[in-house]
Length: 604
Image 1 (cartoon, one colour):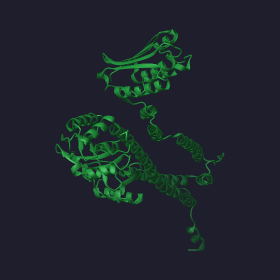
Image 2: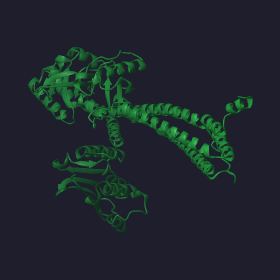
Image 3: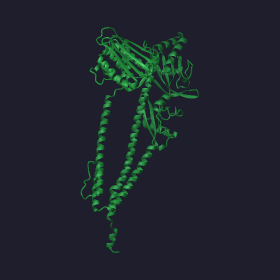
Image 4: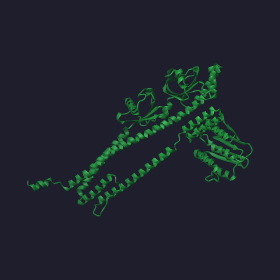
């Protein structure tokens, strides 16, 4: 065989060169990009999942603190109650001890059923006497959980009475009642006598069922027969105080002051030993509630997500292989011009892959129709991708600005409450009890109005808030009007939307009495009427123009001539938004004589 034949045999055909070219320039980069994309998507998904879980845990922490605040409010009512202070003092002094004990237990019994999950309310006096009302026992001078508590009654008294703080004691075993184990956590405060603030009267302990924590903090999904996601709580000593079952409670699984990462590893090891999930699919996130020094731990099973991601990777590989087959087939058919055209497309792809999404494939007359179609589709894809990235950048910027504005505008309601409480104590120190009462009323209406403004509350709660609001108005207007409130006992537990009546009452006080020299009288009545709650608000003020009354009664208040009735318009709009046509508002008014507003809302 001569040299010429040998040289011909060593030559590679154009088709093979084209195939190799596409292998190196297109297919291999596509495969690499596929694996790289899988890696990036996995990390991005993991990061986003962790961020989502962290946000969820923060929300759970906020919800826990808000819910616990309502129990702290109840505790506050007890340890500042004048009747409680008087009865505890009589009990310690031996003045009618049997009567004092019964009266004190009656007060505790009435408060115990005001909130769910309260299992016991106990008082330990300065002389060691114990008064309790317990759902789990009927003994008056002994609480069932004391026998199993980590502190003695004396130690508990000394710790709580040492300061003016609310003490939170994490979950401990309480008692077995009716063949069921009860685990309780406790909040406590010393009893305060405003006449002698330094006097040690005793302490109050409110015992709350661990199910309260479980109801707020556990978010498990077992709809498919297996747990995919749940939370549990660990106290500052590393002990579990809330878990998906009672068997896991009170187990110590981490150190007292271990760093966050070390605690996370301990939680992961604990979950692995529990055998709930496969080790490689477990994800653990931790949120530290600084106010309580508790860890809220989220455990999620990422098996389903990883399976879906693996399926997507296989699809990407299959698509890449199919692309390779198509490219090789087209390469065998296309001519030299195709090679040139393809090179043009490949070069454009390289530029685009470097981050220049503004580049485009330039089509010419000699370019084959198939390549031209690919070029145009590629150009369209780059255009859409470029536009999408710009939109994403703009959206991210808007979100960042919105978050900054939200942070700038954020005011912690607890700052307001604590500040008002400080001012209140300053007023008490100065014997300014009228100012103290006004500040307490203001703090109450602020707390009531800020928390969940659109929820429904009991009529009794709404009336209590209105009394404080009217008291402040009377204080502000120097008792220029009298107010009579009459509520039928049958409806006290009925539900009503918060702050629904306040605009009507404010309109009567601010605008109705304006310019009237006779004695100002405001009457408020709530009673049942058939299937409705009947609400009547009557003032003897200056009355309203007939045209305005007609507009209100016909719901024609899109634009009123006066800004003074905007609150009433909003209140009526809210009323129909909440209850629809089942609700009604009727206004009867005579100029110079007064106004009557009648509101009917359904029981449910």
